[in-house]
Image (cartoon, rainbow, N blue to C red; front, side):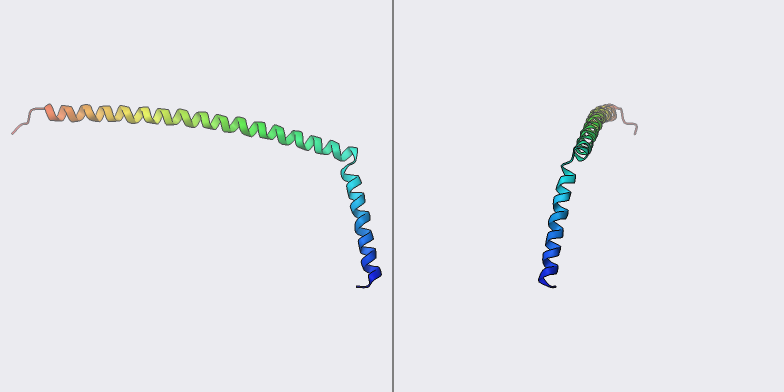
Length: 90
């Protein structure tokens, strides 16, 4: 590649970069960034609400499962005591 070609590519890159910076810092681009960021924040809030609901439901399910297991264990203990005190028929 000739030095003129390299210089032309470099100058083109600089111009394109400058135009890109101008475009990215324009009022329209800033509005788009604001709307995009606002939408991302709304989405984050929605996800956090959903996660909180899931955690609450999981805690309720866990507590109910523990209660159920305790009730079963108590019933099994009563059945064991009843078997131990029942008269044996020989």
